[in-house]
Image 1 (cartoon, helix red, strand yellow):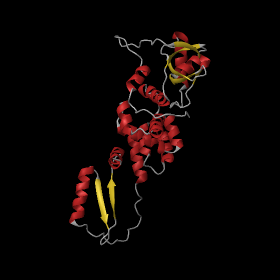
Image 2 (cartoon, helix red, strand yellow; image 1 turned 45 degrees about the vertical axis):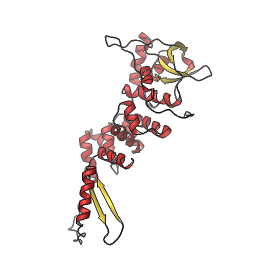
Image 3 (cartoon, rainbow, N blue to C red; image 1 turned 60 degrees about the vertical axis):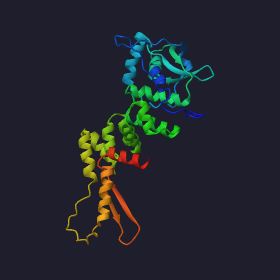
Image 4 (cartoon, one colour; image 1 turned 180 degrees about the vertical axis):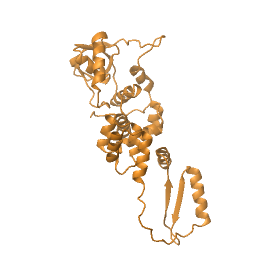
Length: 298
């Protein structure tokens, strides 16, 4: 991994300038206009970025791009930064670099930028997100890098990248799933919606195999997870239990106030005659859980 030195700048400051490099310019007809490169660089002098958030490259897509490069050349220059030893590290455009190698080009057009380590990671993530190239797990890993390495909040990233905070939060939660389930998402056997439904399951790997085998929809997956999580009904009539003591009016009023404020069901269990008790907050969706986490972290 790269050594991120110095104090990182705030996410979003100068982000428009970074995106200007990543997003191709458009002429009045709405067609991409080839960007004039700073220079042509021998392809052996260009190296991949080890912190590139993309981990998988579809071979069929690469073959199509290689054919295009053979016919038309590299229209959009790679964005690189100098490494100080005569070589350049790719900031954006690794697919074009790989296609150029496959097309046996001797040199590639580049835009040379003196980016910091943080900016390199931001541009790599932005390029893939803007082009919808990352699968959900790769996108989540990119967000996690920005949060863990540089302390960026979900709110700041959402504002800078044009995403909702719940979108970022829900994707990052996918990284809590077992590795085999994440692999299914990366192979696009499962969608992000399928994977989100599995987060609350106690047996996500087993259910993921059923989903793939049965070709279940996201709604069907949610129903399956709910069914698997439901407690089994007892076969015999349960022994009658002594009822809980009735809650006093003040406790009920406090429950109602908290429920109205949180827009979620709140239950307060206070031990009679004591100081201790518990508060239970019930949520119906992951978005509600995300909202609750936001409230508690303020």
